[in-house]
Image (cartoon, rainbow, N blue to C red; front, side, top):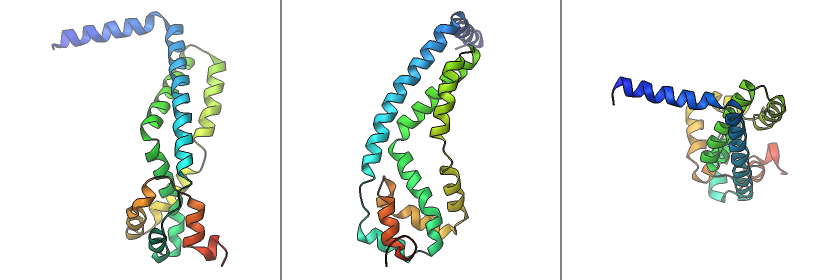
Length: 172
């Protein structure tokens, strides 16, 4: 394909997109709504998987880790959740961004407010602190936490904490 043809395609795409900004905004918002419904379904499915308890052998591995491993435990739980909903999460966030850009360009404050509220819910301040604490652990502890196969999918984190570190979280 020649440069001339590529430029022609870009021009056509730009003209098409610019010809009906309100229509583009409506489409972006509808796309976001569809992705949100799919995301809610997967979020529920992944949440149901959190009922799974880790095996005694997985708990034994955790017990052998230093007590500060607890600091990175939340991050490993977050990774399992994100892995469970990876594809739909990506699509949902993309739709959220597209809808936000379109509503901003077209000055639709009602949609902007809805999207802002949703972003506050989706980006709650739990992921980053857990990630930071995990990264502060020694490399061998990080590797050990990530190597527990059962923790690659959502699991009951509270149960695991109580069983692995009963002096901190459980009843002993």
